Image 1 (cartoon, rainbow, N blue to C red):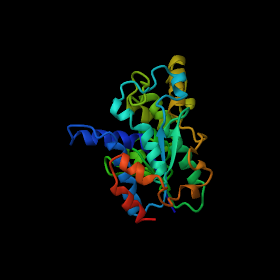
Image 2 (image 1 turned 30 degrees about the horizontal axis):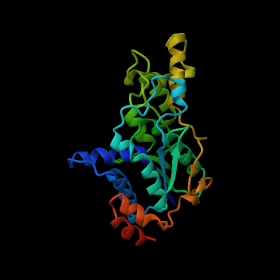
Image 3 (image 1 turned 90 degrees about the vertical axis):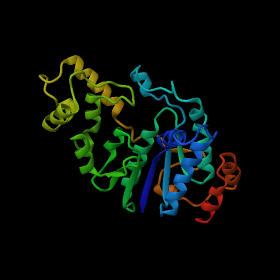
Image 4 (image 1 turned 90 degrees about the horizontal axis):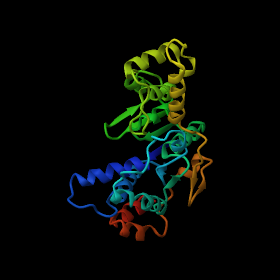
Length: 279
């Protein structure tokens, strides 16, 4: 059994701006249709167990910890208008979706990856996102990260090759070099190569000798590390499927009765025939 975990927010952004490169106007639900079409293609190619995490709102508990953390400010209105319709469309297609509010979609992916990795029936867990922070969830060849943009599959060796540190040190690495996508800057004067070298020499930030970090820098680094750590205890609650306590809930069993109406609304009626042919 292979578990596929998809960053729905990232895919919505990817399809939205992908459409803009080739169209003069935005189809109202074009990005939603793109995400659903991608998932149907995955099922056509053999995927059986799928979970999608979305940011129902952009803000999370991390905004209370760091005032500069990312918010929904600046998101294109046409894109923002497709966030909740994506969740409804996925549910109608029979795909388990976790709309996150207090936590983030990345937390849901981390929690689901942890749940799946602990199941002996699971052969592999594939996390479909290029987000750097998800690299901390990679485990050997069992839990891998798939970057659809670059057509790369990253196992633990791939994470080391990309960042210079093992997956279990990714939160430390990001804390020190920063993550502009999430809105925290890291420590001034610490570049990626230097940080990787220090981590490989000393381990986690908590184990760095006092001579390397001032009290102020250590405090800031630990704050950023708290932002970078993904919460595997995040709730995996689906509006239509309840709480996900077992990977068996992720098995796709076909579309729901309202899917034809939803597919028509998003301008993708052909998805109905494609999906029903796979049931």
